[in-house]
Image 1 (tube, rainbow over the protein chains, first blue to last red):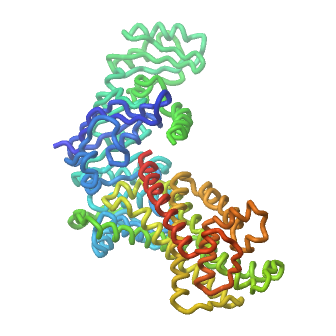
Image 2 (image 1 turned 120 degrees about the horizontal axis):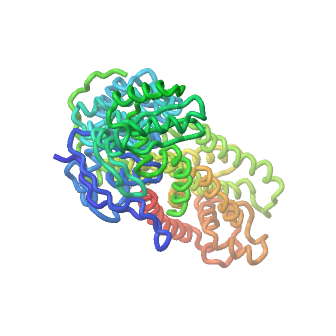
Image 3 (image 1 turned 180 degrees about the vertical axis):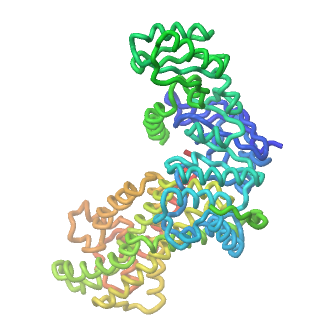
Amino acid sequence: MNAIIAEGLVKTFGSGEKAVRAVDGVDLVVPEGTVLGLLGPNGAGKTTTVRMLTSLLPLDGGRAEVAGHDVATDPQAVRASIGLSGQYAAVDENLTGRENLWMFGRLYQLSSRQAKKRAEELLEQFALTDAADRPSKTYSGGMRRRLDLAGSLIVHPKVLFLDEPTTGLDPASRLDLWDVIRERVSGGATIMLTTQYLEEADALADRIVVIDQGRIIAEGTADELKAKVGGERIEVVVHDPEALSRAVDVLQRGSDGQCVVDEHTRRLTVPTATGSKGLIQVIRDLDEQNIEIDDIALRRPTLDDVFLELTGHHPEEEKAAEDEQAVAAEGGAK
Amino acid sequence: MTTTETVQPPAAVKTSGINQVLQDTMIIAWRNIRGGMRVPDTQIYMFIQPIMFVVLFAYVFGGAIPVDGVNYREYLMAGIFAQTMAFAVAPASVGLADDMHKGLIDRFRSLPMARSGVIAGRVVSDLCSQFIVLVIMMVCGLIVGWRVNNGVLPFLGGVGLMLLFAFAMLWVGAFIGLSVGNPQVAASAGLIWLFPVVFLSNAFVPPSTMPTIVQNMAEWNPISAIVAAARDLFGNESIIVSDAWPMQHPVPAALIWCALIIVIFAPLAVRKYKAAASK
């Protein structure tokens, strides 16, 4: 069974010549009990996709089914089977943690008693019991995220949408949240996770879909995506700039690929098909030639490399530019 | 983080129809009141501002604005009541803009709750606080010399009219708040146009003292009809020296104005809510 099916999703903002296709023909299939990582820079269409799948935005094209219910024709049934934890921790900051969870429970149509009981359980589970009676505006960023996430788990939703759940969290809180997410998956939930953190997708997602400018540009497991970019490579930092060209000759000898030279940092990178054997050979050759090195390593491609390869940018570089674009687009859509 | 597995999942119960609408509305209203009381702004708005207006106008302007043959404090009170009811625009617009700004409206919309619950809950909670504000002002009014001279039923009619007017203005506030979507902008956008509208009326001085054009505007101003009707119902002197229809028939005129405002702004607010949420 597939928990999420999307076919040819389209969302257009604005009209006429200024129209922007924020989501432009996205197909997704997420089997039950798995985690899909939706990866891409800000403004790529991740959040818009999530908003369509959670019935917050009408579809301009295509169709989508979540937990067996059509998003367009039966949105209320979709809402009753999903949990959404947004980019901004959407809890009422004037209410206490306990009051927030009680309210969300009531709005999920639980009885007052059920809602109270569920709130207690979630407060306990998310280590918020001590802070339960403080207004949530006094919470730390991590506590607020936990409360927000707890709010999305009230009815043990079959499908959980987490839109950049760890953005802005310190590393310890992030690892805590990862644990919670893994726990949900082992409990049978299906999760769609958007993130800008590649290591987050790497750590949590069974499959990854990379989108840019509203289109899917790659998909597969983390390993498949990395393999797409190429195998391992050897990276050498040469001590003496004079020795660079000789070092290039050495590296080129053991590789079919192109050696990339960064003269400024004296860093050479070359693909290798022979892994650690190749590395040993290179070290021997360099030593034989009396080329002194500062650093040498065998590197596996990271999802950062995948991203760079697919979009031509580092994801970090894009953030700033895309933030501005997103703001501009939002202004235009109003 | 503890990892105790929880008890059996409570499945979302499906209720529908009018019961769900009412229940969700009351939950949102509860949330607005509960949370709102923790915000100093709300407390000032509800308890300090009404007392301040009554005392300020009664003692500062009361002596300086002579209105012939009339107890000015009695004349004034209906004007201040109506002004404060009109200011209901502010909490409604700021509240909804704030919810939108913070992403709470998104959260609410992702829940299997009644669509209309968020706006309706806001209107209910703000109407409650407007009622409290009105009671506080009336008590203050009685202390500074305002009197009800017309019996219980017309008085209750006057209170009802004030709340109806507040109800109408709440929809205007909801519309503004959902249009601007930013609480700071909503605060000023909600009030800036209200001051001239309130002052261009019979709320504080008789329009007969104004230049002819301004006088005509004042006579047809909804606020004037509300204020004149309230003065009638409370039995306060209203010194109407005008042939304009709303001034001759203030109670029907006031009711018509309220109905018009509601008929125009309630659908606009609901439409804005739908559009705002689908951005």
